[in-house]
Image (cartoon, rainbow, N blue to C red; front, top):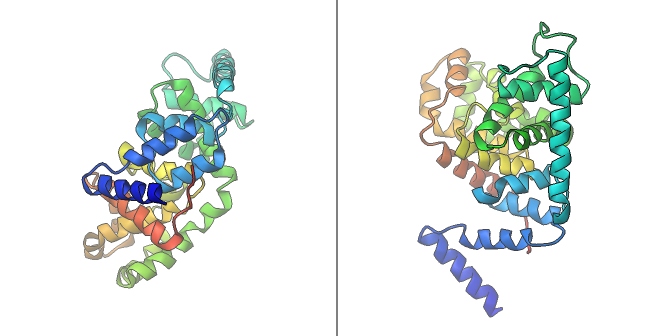
Amino acid sequence: MADDSQRNFRSVYYEKVGFRGVEEKKSLEILLKDDRLDIEKLCTFSQRFPLPSMYRILVWKVLLGIIPPHHESHALVMKYRKEQYWDIHHALRVIRFINDSTPQVDVFLRIHQLESGKLPRNLAFPLEPEDEVFLAIAKAMEEMVEDPIECYWLVSCFVNQLNSKHKDSLQQLPKILEQYLNIEDNRLLMHLKACAAMSKLPYDLWFKKCFAGCLPESSLQRVWDKVISGSCKILVFVAVEILLTFKMKIIALNTAEKITQFLENIPQDNTDAIVSKAVDLWRTHCGTPAHSV
């Protein structure tokens, strides 16, 4: 009991003096020392805290199934992943879908298409909406991850997660957004409805692309921590908080087109604060997962 009290005191102290995360980082390091990583505990940790940047990519790779929970298998599995990447890369060069001047994110898209059996017959075929989503996420991930092969697998597996595990939930998010906005600021909701803007909000940017192309890297990573660890509902609260933050600007706009145009290009200077408030709002409405190390 004394140990718990002392630990709780330290946590509060660290937070007050600006060292929030010291205890959390230690807890994560303990989890990562297990011979077999506990997926459930890593998910719970990621739901409760932002992942330290030095461990983020490792945790994402485990949670997305790119590498298995067993430490001793990591190097071998990544070796196979690398070979698989270059085999498909070579095949795409042979059939002239890519060359030395092909942008990296377009290479990722073609590899993903070939892997999933959706490669078009030729390059003249226009991109599908799902391809645009893939490219947006790939461009954002490329800013976060230096190694191109690691980056490809993170993008591909993240997109696969969105299309499988979160597919049904993502379709419900616009309706859920309206419910929570009604709770948080009914006047703002009424204004959006009066302008016929609710159906024209940038839902694809916010929910299908998970804010890729909307939020800068430092803010986006914290949102993706929650999505990758199992909660796409965080996307709703980021959207709500964007609307609340820019309420006065939105109320000054009187057409759906102007509102949507503004929301697609929000100022980038206080997005970290927006995400922090969104996480607090998410916890207020959805609770905080229990965590045990």
